[in-house]
Length: 466
Image 1 (spheres, rainbow, N blue to C red):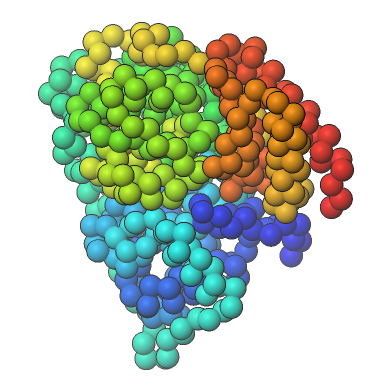
Image 2 (tube, helix red, strand yellow):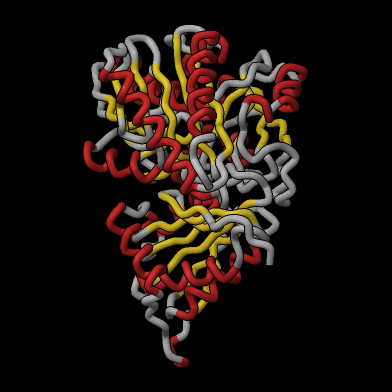
């Protein structure tokens, strides 16, 4: 087998490209490690729609059976549905087979501990130790694992969403909204149109066949949503929605056919929830300054963490936050479950739009205005990425010592902060890239921040041998 790169192991789990950096041996060994980690008890397993997911499912089942686990297979489901079912079934852990927003050739597995709770750093370290040392607790011939199937996961998830205390279903139904949903041929292809119809919306489906042959990028960036934008505009719909591959994210398109990045999803939901209940908010270090303004307006505290759902969830538990998330379009709803949930976000955004009595464009215009740019620099390996971020930090520390106006925030990677703008560089946990995020009052200023940063990184990379 041609092998050019190791799989990426991070807070998000294990991911790699099928046939090059990820194969069934790695998956089976991690499944054995996880089965050992949970003591051979009950594990919920589910998968997204990728064509490689059935293969990985067999590898996962083999590892779990070998360690004596009882497996409850919930089938093809969004990641938040799988984690919610682990909570409902009181499982001792769960494995989700997905590569989320990564390209179609990628796949991977994500782990959760008891009742669908994301692994803490201590738990991730212990799982890694078992995997690295191959300290597997293999079951004897007469204590092999067993398999059970569960087919009501989507219905249970919908029930939990529709029972949310912030949701006014009669109000939503009275507005008779017209919605276009683009599930990207991913795991949200069935459940999201069902939810919209339960809310009384007129629904136009786009890419809602869960066959794993993605007709657009699995990551719903504005550049990937041309068809959705055209259909929203041509059909005179009130809003467009788009998921990533496993439907833990949601991004929006305005009634004019203008795509919005994931920052707007989180901003709208935070404003909605804080309008109904006061409490702390948690977001990542690379999330928009809009949240600073929204939380200040509601008189609550905003906490920032490293990028990664696990870090946000840990902080949300610590401060008992009422809402949290990432600027990718991933929002965490404690009333449903502590994980990013793009399906619940549909209900929240529909509620926000119905309450406003206006359009999505008007909601945007009523928000504080900043311009953000996201770029990525491809890197030969994760090791080179680490060295590059370290080299950049040395340069920026030198500038700071020389009296530069920026402040360095090292919560995740290197974030340079000024009074009215910021730029953050960090190693991706899911791809061999350096991510560069910037935000400023104008798009030109944000673009310039990104350009200058990439120029510095490119120069530094030439000095790194690999």
